[in-house]
Image (cartoon, rainbow, N blue to C red; front, side, top):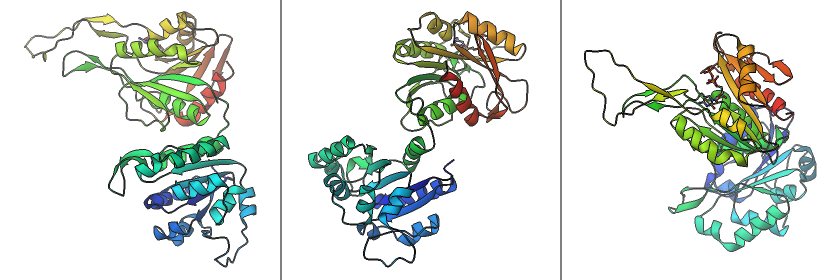
Length: 395
Ligand code: CTP
């Protein structure tokens, strides 16, 4: 995924410096050429040998102090690299960058670097909230630097508050977002429903289906990496969305209906991959239903069809994408759904074959448009998500 990409990781003096070892290792596994530049203060927290072992490259500490056996100048490295992350970024280094001070290898190389620069501040809460630091961050934003806000939590100094280095996964997601993908969905807002709904019978039992949410979350994650602003309205699932994606959790079909209706007008694309229950118990029993010797009949009533509602009430320019899950007449039934629900595209999948549909990591999808039927190859849901987005952007 990152083959052929060169990434510079600038590490400054913070207790969180050790976390960058995991990041370097993960990026390297994805094929990137990683160069770590440490400030002198970072040496107090971690040794360059750790990074050298992980990356296979010399870890650079200072422009003048070390006698390198290899050819590396701040200019050639700055020219070669595709991305520069400073993490953890101390208040001191942020102040230097914002003032144009270049007094070591990190600040000098960064000053000469013209592509995407990302700063991840990590420090004590009061230092982070200090207006001087905030002014410096604003100044850096003005000059095109991207800033990741620190996380909240228990800090090494014993305080609790904002200032923690965000999880390594978030740092990595941001790197992938900027260098592994085209930003064809930049400034686009996407609403995705995903996962199953649960219809309560009593406080103990409910009716649900086998949806895992994997397909919807894969589309959400890829859309995020392609620059979209993404919200998932999600049933109960065990899959993970990238940090930066907004998640609205729901339980029942009614909850999902309400959240979609309240939100969909604000989005450019509405993608409905959730497996919404078509029926819900007519009467909910607030006490647990005790068993008897007789059989039990539960009367069900229809839920509202969310896709149909949105299809009837679309704003100009909004695009609606539905899913269909069939066991027979896949194309015919899906075409009928496209027309009936006024969608722009239906992603049709079947559950008849092994490794397709619910829970599986792979799938076979046919895209049904008003005047076109596109059969996508059997593939992972991750790859299919990109292929589906390729067609969505054309709508
Ligand atoms: N859907 C919805 N609201 C419902 C039921 C379904 O928005 N109450 C949406 C799903 O998210 C999906 C599409 O409608 O995008 C089709 O779902 P599917 O279950 O395949 O079809 P149904 O319309 O429910 O028809 P049937 O069950 O008869 O196949």
